[in-house]
Image (cartoon, rainbow, N blue to C red):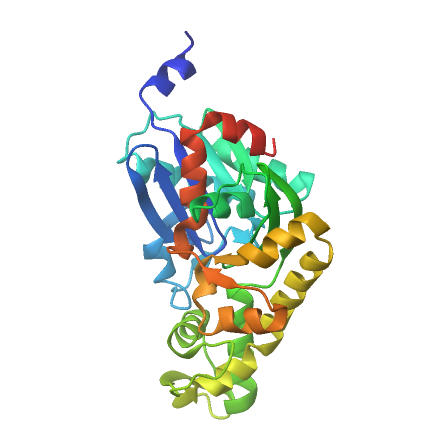
Length: 341
């Protein structure tokens, strides 16, 4: 037995949702042990990591000279190989309670339709983080399993997983992906749309953390029955001074209109390309929404009105992908059938 195999005996397998906005880790037999922002704070001159995860996100927009806060993943794929590797290594060690000599087998949920180059980026980042084996699984397949759907049964399931960087739309049947598409329209795109709206409407500059707070507090796909408002602060573009404004759910609904429309159009395209027999299953079973953005107010109603199909939100949509990859750790035969590599 070589040294690497010996280390495997003392390690726990991991399921990883390496997302643009957040990284979640599931340890076999323990459940979700880590949920932190996918952010790294670096020293510009030396490249040394100063903070990772929650501590690094707190620095967004507030870093002093010489420090930068970066997201190593963009639109669901690895944008900075070295930083992604360091971030994943940090999270793996943290999930294993700071044990250094651990080389787990990991399963990573990745966006649908990623290129061969993008697959290699995930594999390289994982191997450089000293894992023993890496398996890549499409996020829609993992999300469906995490939402409790029977992905190995001979009928169709449609899952729409809307995270921070991508919206993944998948039609699944018999442990396979019949159709999948990944849209670069998701939570971060919505934050950008809110920042742009506030800039144009109020001549006020706000950061991504403030935009995210607006989305969480008053964001909606349709105007709410009971209007909501939120007060935010930023920097005036007119005189450079701090300024406070109040925005309503109706305003943010308008700001998010194009993002929501793009997601609905992606779903319609998927339905147009669904085989007739599976269309019958979808009309009966409906569409399941997962991912953090599925909690956007009235999004399910908007999709239901646009498609005429039943639409439901998973019980724990934020963690559906990592829970699904965790189930695959426990069912290696299923993992072998659905893994991309």
